[in-house]
Image 1 (cartoon, rainbow, N blue to C red):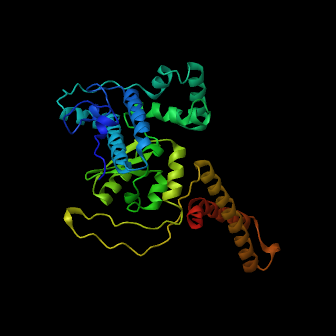
Image 2 (image 1 turned 60 degrees about the horizontal axis):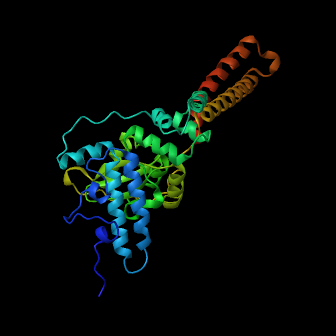
Image 3 (image 1 turned 45 degrees about the horizontal axis):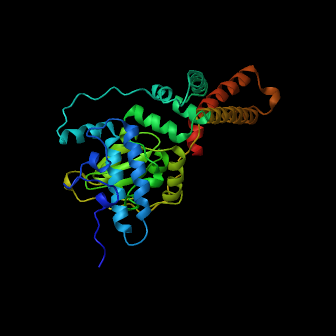
Length: 335
């Protein structure tokens, strides 16, 4: 017979006898702790300790407890969800504490000084990036530290993907092109919601599409760009085509999925590259139209000696029209 253990008492040293534990008790926090760094610190310590039991006779209990710890941390570091959860425990709504801006967080925790922050601002302005991405590209701080500060600034949870893993049972329900284009993977799901990890909060349109497809509330969780890129490459490779049908409204029967078709890979061209491409098609359109017009006039008039200035002007005007057509429609025909 398998040995009976109380994982909360035996592994985490929790003395409270009442079950179930609330999230603060589970993470050994004071009631209504608001410091996200403290919440994450307790979570990481407990996560590391529980993983020691991940092999052997208590592997199942270890994984279940790891999931509980992650769920508690993700709730308490999400500003909106924490406010809702605290209300269920009887906390009066104080309207929420003022959140520091991303730059304020970096300065307050000593990640950057004013000079490095100004360097990041100037680079961001020159290249057209957010300060957050400029800090990472300039290697002024490590990506995990930057994303932690960003998460605190916008009130969303931050995770290390290796700590929580990917919800593989949800992966196949999401269209691969959507996951690749918007850089996200599902990390946790229950009866009512699915957590999506991404370097950025999901845009409302994508969030709504996923809500209709999965029939559950979608919540964003932040992680580093490199971790997401690796996960997307693994779970949504370019040749992945499996797509689940979108849930029909009002309980109607879902439509059958269309036959599998290789999706076109999303183009990752920059605005500068798109502009160059348009100019190239404009030049090609002008040249080809002028040549075609001159050849046509040559044939109609019986030689170059019979062509006058008006013919040259006509060829130029038609060439301009060709350039405009090439600029507007050329890139579409090539896609």
